[in-house]
Length: 629
Ligand code: ADP
Ligand code: MG
Image (cartoon, rainbow, N blue to C red; front, side, top):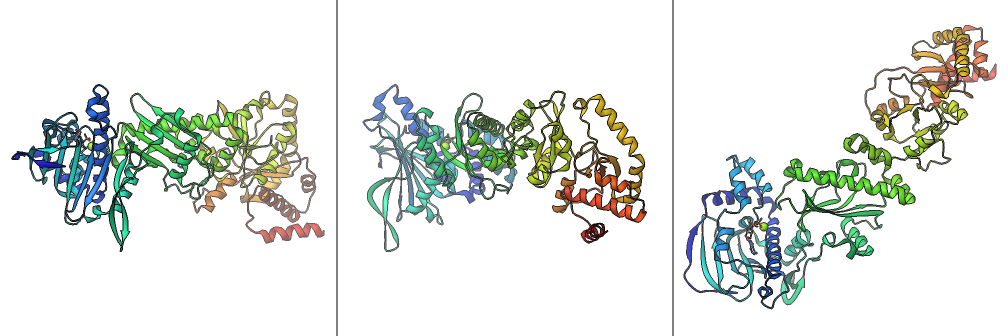
């Protein structure tokens, strides 16, 4: 501790410092805890500086090389003290560092002031204005500091009202004590429990031990003991060298970070250097959280600046579709005071986000190649949100499409294991498009009559039944310059997959069915847009298809279920003239019976497609009538 040696000297702050203090106190008042964070950060910087200087001159350690930070408080005197045995400051340094605005950050801040208090308050987040934040909770601050290697100690004292005093004092220990004389209502900082929880929250990963006296509860009161206790974990796992970290440590850290009781599926740990400097440690969970589909809920990626916790900022650090990622991003460039608003427009954050997104996508690609079983598990849990990525993340579209897995007619089960690359590698000679069908269940897709011709010709079709597939396919039109083509929309053009003979046959069938088609069209009237001869069916009598540019039947139902208006489109009925039922229809001469028959065929096609009948009772009546006759 220090004793006064000679009379003190009064000095004035530069005018702007006063202005700065005023602004700071007003704009950061609701977030008082950060005072502790800032002071601990300064103490930690002071330790780093000492270590650096001691590389050249080990005597600076003065036989005390165990660097640490101590927090203590005195309830009677109502003071809170943050002490370190770091580099300390000499007289000039005290004046330069905390008595003037010579430091570039503060100066730049002041140059940017507009005079509009709200705007200026916002600016605070962009600059490191740490030490002065202490005036939020203190009305008098005493700094007692002795620089490493120097005999003289300095005391600086200020009420934050425009002037400060400076005097020479005695201090045995090297480093700095910052003594905050707390304001009237700030007693909460005189609690062991409060201080410890603030340290845990913001400074757990500071690599220096932060010690406090252990306290005991006696008669409902905290009573300090003489025993020291290290409050923080004092180790930032992510800042350590990859090779020195054991697998169990990564797993343990994940548990603490995520509260997930299952181990993570995989993780990626990177130190990025260059224009942006940051460390990222990103985990992919094994199981999806219950609120995966709540797009408003973001948590999981924590932002640190030089080991100090700043905030949960997943929504700024990760795109929405990767909202399941957990981890830490530790920037070396952002200021400690950075606010959410500033993160929003920050170029640094944008670069961090792009870099981290790429890391996650690379990690997934790697997993899909080297650990297909793990990837299968991943896709089962998170595939649906990955599909959102295709429209959200334009820059990574192709990378994302490669990660997709679907069901297809090539597989027996609905395990979703077919990649587009697999599909393309199995495409037939002359096949130009990637064919798919959407339906509201895997079974409905798998048994859809639209597949008949494809089965006959042995052409693979993707079977899509996730709700998001319809949305995905509305923007996803091409993969590796192959068109994605719905088999339930527009005219079926198999292109080179059909030979001349087949094309000739088609024309003949169409010609022969012309009058039947007209009759059915008349019978169904407004129900259909058009009636056509099908080239998709081999075993079924009829099916419905959507026009090339219309919504598919499935999408129309999804939209309606979501309470959205849909354009009033009618389906196209395709009939199979070689089917016995259609031949029977053709031979029906009674016109009332013909009409009923045509309607039954239309309704059947609608049901097979997963649609709902407007009047099921009428349908049943008609069927029964045919059964009886
Ligand atoms: P910043 O940490 O961004 O530089 P601060 O306002 O937090 O801004 O601190 C101002 C300066 O005061 C620091 O750069 C440092 O030179 C000096 N300083 C503050 N606290 C200490 C300390 N505990 N030990 C040594 N120097 C300190
Ligand atoms: Mg600081």
